[in-house]
Length: 269
Image (cartoon, rainbow, N blue to C red; front, side):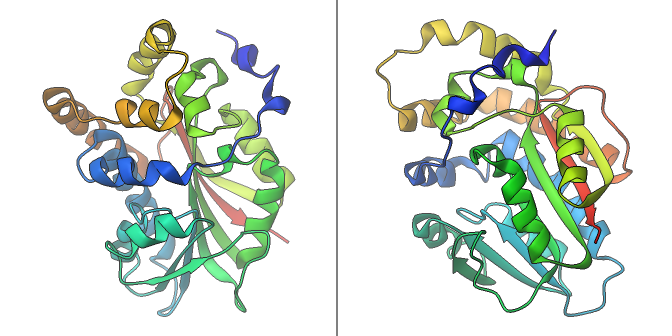
């Protein structure tokens, strides 16, 4: 199947994240299989990255939103100083209910920091930005010499659906596309793989059959809320299956399929 199916109109997408989604996500993230699986994977990789850093290292999450990932970074980086930054104050209000670390409202292109960071994370954020190379360069500037970027993004243009539109995505990524963009913007890729492997066939089937059942007039907030609702038995089964991937990824092994991508990249001068 060709990944180029949805590339034709990418330049016409404006992207952006709608802060109206924070309330719906905050209500389900703690229990939802997708968020739980992603947090396990990010935690495993973050723990590895900071293991050799001296006490007091600095960790920044860009686009921390409601603090769902940030609280796991606090646990995974106990010897460091963790900071969360988001463009939207609405998300930071929720984040304060989850974390103890510093929270900053700001734009990554105009960061309000006097220091760089040893680790910068950005999780399912850059797909919202029309110029993703620009934001990758902005993240590069925030990193200390030889600092590490942790990144997750949605995978495969052929999985594009109404949900990507509702979520304000500009694109989904091919594996080699993400690797190339990281290298072009000053990083050496240390690890890059697909993940959510068991989700791939389910997402493909769901995305290809669901659009016909989506009312044209339904707003994005309602679509997102419906997409992330908890279905008890299904949620439990998928939580268990996806938990197995964290062990695989902690060993830095590659998965052959997946609905998302995760990267660990080192800043180079």
